[in-house]
Image (cartoon, rainbow, N blue to C red; front, side, top):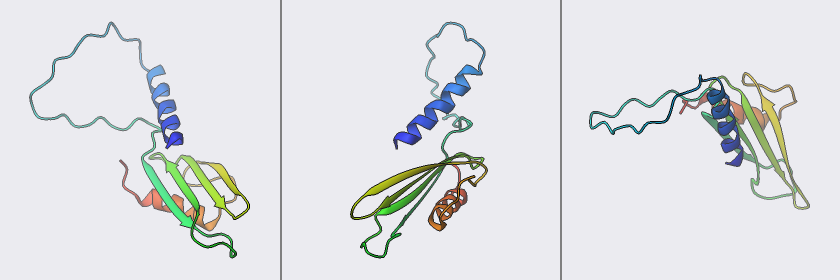
Amino acid sequence: MLVSLVLSLAALNRRQRSRPAAGPIRPRQLDSGPAAEPAGAVPGAIQRVGVVRFNPYHDTGGEYSFAVALLDEAGGGLLLTGLYHRDQSRVYAKEIRAWTSEHELMDEEREAIEKARAQPPK
């Protein structure tokens, strides 16, 4: 959730920096007509999410480990993987570009990316 917020704020900041300087802010009147179509998504905003839970170790019960893909429309973003074991838990982050990573991916991580890719954009 926090990662999503950070990535969305970064995309918004890039978008605002690329706009020309605006004049003074003026209050707008509410339109009583039909609702306007929502504006397109901010480039780079998280639009697709894929989650896979799994058990990577044979000596633990339950599917406490996870892979979460947080991707934009172009298949770029972040893959978070949490591996749970009785003695320790570890979390890994991998950058994703064009639906893949330069780092080696586990089957569950590839599955999370594919789930995000198959999801309709928000």
